[in-house]
Image (cartoon, rainbow, N blue to C red; front, side, top):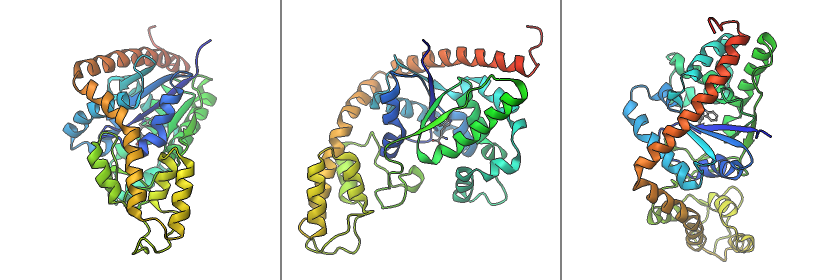
Length: 333
Ligand code: TRP
C-alpha cells in the first residue's frame, strides 16, 4: 500500500533553532517512517523578502540541510530537496493565482503580521504578498496529506485547502487537501521572554550552538523580573526558564521540585538555569556530532540534495501532467 505523504520545509535564511525543533523538526523525525516525507529548502520563498541578498540565501541552503541531517532526518527515508529546482512549483503557482483574490491573500494573518513587522507600508513586494499561493503549490505538487509545521503556518495550510477545493471543483479531483500537524509545544518563547523564538528577534538558541554558547544564553535568560533575591518567592507561570524546563527536562519530578522551591523562594535562578543548560546540551550533543560528521563531508550533503531533488522532480512531473490534463492545457501529448 502506498504511504501517505508529508511535505514541509523551511526558508534558508539562517540556521534552525529550538523553536523549529519542537514546532516541526521532531515531528518530521517521528513521522518519516510512517509517511513518505518530502522536506523542502524553500529558497524561492526566502527570496520573496531577501531578493536583494541572494548570497545569504545561497549560503544557508547547506546550513539548513546540515540542521536537517543533524536532528535525525534520514535521507534514506526522507526526500530533501531545493524548491527552485522544481519549476513545476512555479508553474502551479501561476495557475493557483487565478483561484484566489488579492483581498484574500492580504487577509492571511501570518502575511499580515510579517508585512507589519517588515514595515513595508504601501510598498509590499507582490511576490512576497503572494507567497502563500506559492506555498500551496509547494504542498500540493506532491499531493501531501500532512504538513508538520509551527503554529504560525496554520493559515497557510488553511489557504492551501481553499485553493485545492476551488481547483478540484472547477477542474476535477486532482489535488489533495492537506492537514497541518502542530508540534507538542505550540510556541516556544525566546530567551528574552518574547512570545516567540525568532531569528529576526535575535532571541534564539540554535541547534548548532556550541555547548558553552548554550550555557551562556541560558544563564542570561529572561526570568521573573520581580525577583531580586533568591529567597524572594518567584513566579513560575509564563516564566520562560520554566517553560523550557517543562519542554526540555525529561525529569518531571525534578521540574516539579524546582517549581515548588521557586515559588517558596527556596531555589535561585542560577541553580534552575544551570540544570536547564545541562538538559538542553544533552539533547543537542548528538545533533552536534552528526552535524560535525556531515560538515566534514559536504560532498555527501550535495549528493543527498541532488538525489532528493531528482525524486521530487519526478513526483512534480506526474502531478503537473494531471493538472495540465484537468485544465485542458495538455497540448500535443
Ligand atoms: N513558510 C514556511 C516558514 O516560513 C516555510 C515553507 C515554505 C513551508 N513552503 C512550505 C512550510 C510548505 C510548510 C510547507 O517556515
